Image (cartoon, rainbow, N blue to C red):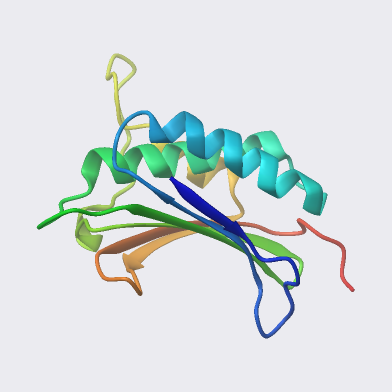
Amino acid sequence: MTYSIDRCPCEESPRLGAMALHPVAESVPRARHWFRKLLTPYRPNCSVDDCVLLLSELVTNAVVHGTPDGPWLVQVEWFRVGTSLLVEVHNPGLPESVRLRRPDADDAHGRGLLLVASLADSWHSGPGRFGGTVVSFRMAGAWSAP
């Protein structure tokens, strides 16, 4: 796993940080730990716990559903866009395979995007700029207006 922090985010360069994770189950708790550690100093108004939960769901989905042709990494980036926090998770899967499910009460899986849809102000999936798929969520009002 590698990570970076962008010390001077601005309107022209709004990225706050990034992580590259190996597509293994152990990367999910690492992502939670480092995301919390790297996001907290920015003091967002939104719940850091909610953001960590949503990141965890998207990284889990990326690890489980990524469909690579060769070696790959899960790419995570987070941005300050105006007063919103935008978090993107990239994987080599197919964008059309991302869908919001309505699992039955006894289904063991399928609630990740349902959590994202219910806690985030918005979410999106589609083709990623690295190829493959990006799934993102936005937390509006994460920071006060400048």
